[in-house]
Length: 118
Ligand SMILES: N[C@@H](CCC(=O)N[C@@H](CS)C(=O)NCC(=O)O)C(=O)O
Image (cartoon, rainbow, N blue to C red):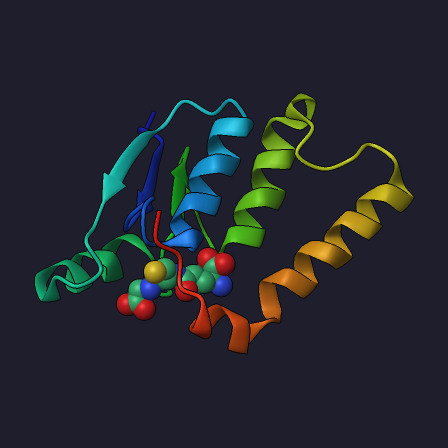
């Protein structure tokens, strides 16, 4: 069986990476972290091999490649439903997805004005 990996850039400066990493941890997934520094030109070629969107986070699990944080969250919720990443109640789940979708695709100006630095 292929090993489970999560490709990320930095948990200090990349909120996307941190989100993917937190999701995987909260889901109780056993995974190896693959760190690819975003500002390293050679690393970009490596990210292309590891992530079809050339973006991180990207999860590899049992031959399945999942990129994009929301897709990773949904996938983790399917394989580890007891972790409770999404609410059990359908209406609550829909509400949760709406909020996540809004956060995920909105607030662009705020994001570029307030980059993460932990
Ligand atoms: N919609 C994507 C966005 C991911 C994203 O923007 N990742 C950034 C994190 S720093 C990235 O990989 N940037 C690398 C680059 O743009 O070269 C997701 O949710 O995973």
